[in-house]
Length: 285
Image (cartoon, rainbow, N blue to C red):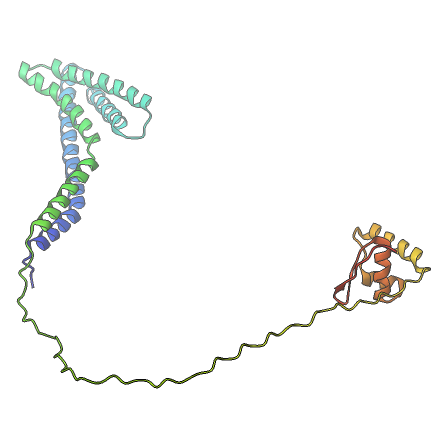
């Protein structure tokens, strides 16, 4: 069913207008360029035939048809350079000078041809028309600032219309009383709770943890004859590997137990390794 809300109709129109604005603009620009091309070709052809006829009467021979063609082609080429964006400015200035010289020469030939003054002026203005059409064709492009301003104005108009549109009339709906019916009051005497004497709970007894007394670790005795050999092995190992020797490596090299190897390391290097997970303190013997 079609809507009758003015705000909805306006918003729909604005959306359709915005959707068709760009294709319509591009189509118009394409049509303008086609008409400009037709005017340009018609003006060049008119000027070319007029100049060729005049030069033929001046006994220029077949060059009468070649010279105007060269000048017209030069004019179109120079105008293309001038109106194309991205080309260096010095190239555009040089193209503009060549174009002006060719246009003046072409207009002079058209004006110098025999005929009445008005007819000669018309043929001279044909060249001016070529100049104007090409300059305008090079500047045909969308005006994005104007498009943005028009879109903003259209959106503001839609917002104003939406704000000023009165809201639809509310529908009268019967009010249903949902208040619950009052409950009749009944006089009930309050019940008295019996008083029960509850003895207080006894306080928990404090648990005292027994003091931890570390058990001294018995350190094995190191045989005195192993000291020179162990010192030599430790130094040789550090020179060859570049790192300190471990307890297991020293025990393997001396064929002793790890406890004796640990005591040897402690005595020689002052290092205190761990014994069964418990650090062993003390200095060198």
